[in-house]
Image (tube, rainbow, N blue to C red):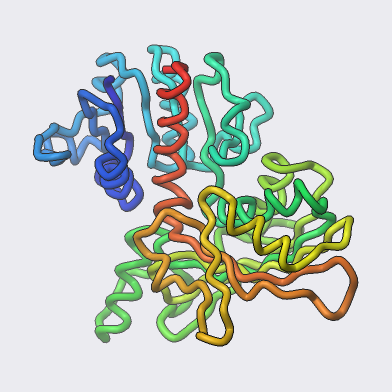
Length: 328
């Protein structure tokens, strides 16, 4: 199998390479794709060197699968061209997520919706993935009426520029600014750009993508906050259900859900943290408790590595499903 990786030299792209190798993805030829300035650079994958090529060269190589770890503009321009050349595209950007003609996939939830006709498949936003992973089993049992989400998001979600800003600020050096303010020792209630409705684009992704993946009847409101952390995103989630729930049964359901690890023991100070989620693929859930202020409502704390399950791992898992079901 010939697999193109668009954005192979970027932050997410390098994690995709790592995940492909770790999960022993069945590729024979890797086609790393990047900007023209990186063409010719060698990318090492499982002991073999592969030269970076440009977009058109990769399209002409007739790949079976193309994983896009680049920006939305790149995906809008080039993903259809890869698809026209016969590749199935898995796109990490926001370009296709809310397009009604393209499916938004978290494999543990809705991979069964995919068919051979789906040539461009959207990977959800990183903060959405961990949210819907935690909500899915609970929605199936109790029906989610409304979720209030506050996120505490890693700087790696912004990219290399943000990582360098934090690093340089901590070292007392001048730095190029990824954010409008200092991020070290600070919290910015400002992820992505502000929209006319007063929300940020990141906050609306949580609302709209959850509806598309799980159920359009679910109401979600979010506040997204950037914090000086590198290991993963954290979310405080307040969920109101249509039905009452048994807390023990609810914990058991989460514990038995593929891709979720429950870390919830206040006696031993056990709860999810980005420091511990870093480099792992699961979504970690803890601080599970009833909301004492109103009926049928739960509080929980959800953490996941935004570069892995929030991006690279989810994309590779989609690829695995396509291979295992003969769709590529």
